[in-house]
Length: 574
Image 1 (cartoon, rainbow, N blue to C red):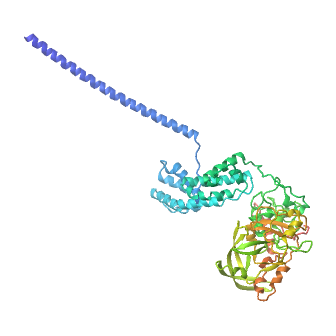
Image 2 (cartoon, helix red, strand yellow):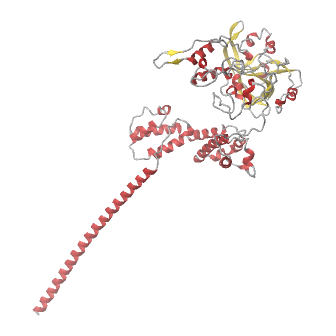
């Protein structure tokens, strides 16, 4: 019995030892598994960190650094600026103070002034962002800006690939931004008016398109892109000239028939579609002289890096023969009246509609202002008017008078063009009366006037003129189409936005017909001053011209002093 009991105790003891050893083994295995798991997690974390660092190295090696254009305060540049700023700077881990510094550096001075006084802190940065967004991020203003950009697209009258390409890029930019803002549907009604601006290629765009009347702006942009792909713009892209210019009679009319391939660009607006003397953007002699002086260009040949006194060019003014450029000749702009070789005078007059009243307007580039007769203005009761005190310079002295200024709407007979004109009231039933030129007879008599269509067919022997458009308004209606010029002494036709005009060429200015309307003593003070009706007198020794020439020739020596040439009288040898 005792042996059995001992054996049983021994077996029980062995079981306990085995269980204890097994428990210790399991505990050790569990610890080893935990250690192995920790090692695996650590290794995975290290590998992930290395992969992230390698990815950053790859990205930094392949992607170039983005540059953010400074914001100039315009609504059309707001979205491109703020989107780049938020991605590149605002959403990064940079400290807010650093972001604020970047924001200030990316704003033009006039925009930076809005936040210049804020503290360089976190609160200052948040306030700065709110101020900029409230000032320039107004959605309605941004939409209105892009809509105006589309409305102000220029009219393309030919199939010049370069002009069409510029038109396409401007349209695409504004359409894409309106799509981004979700407001493209509100402006799709402008599609037809935009399409009508492409007169030169409209037929190509809609040919074969049955539903082109229902196009929206994105669809029109796609059609423009297809046309551009077929007709790519290159540096030598030109519209073929389908008409053969007449033989040039002499050098005096050389500019009217210059070859487009050799024609210099206009020195005033850098446009190659016209020569400098025909520039309508800078139309007055004084403005042209100021621009030449600012650019330090020669007054004779418009070349750079020398003055008129040093100019070796043998070119002379085509208008008067003196040593200055034709575009700044004082006689060039005196196109009001001229006596032809047969003694007959033809004035540059065009028939217009002034708020529904048909009348005639005379184009006088020598007048500093525009004028309208009292009889015409009294028929326009809804016009805006104002009183102004002006000093009127007269032939025998000066006087101060109160004059009435009115704003009228001058429209072409076809109704396609309209011009808002500020006119001075002249207390007369009509400004002047001209002899009927019988335009159709003139057109039939000269081959170079073929195709000119006049809107005035009145058979009366004398025609009244009620409106005179001065130099500034003449510049607004001037077109890029070249004047129709024939042989010396033959009439010249010029197309304006209000219609065709025909005038006699020549150098003898005749104001007799206009002076005959000023015989009344009552009207003397109103009409007799030198500026009225284009009679402004420019003396031969006018000091303004001397001063302009003095400034043009004035140069500063590197050591500090100034050098200039002595004033020299024109047409005299040095």
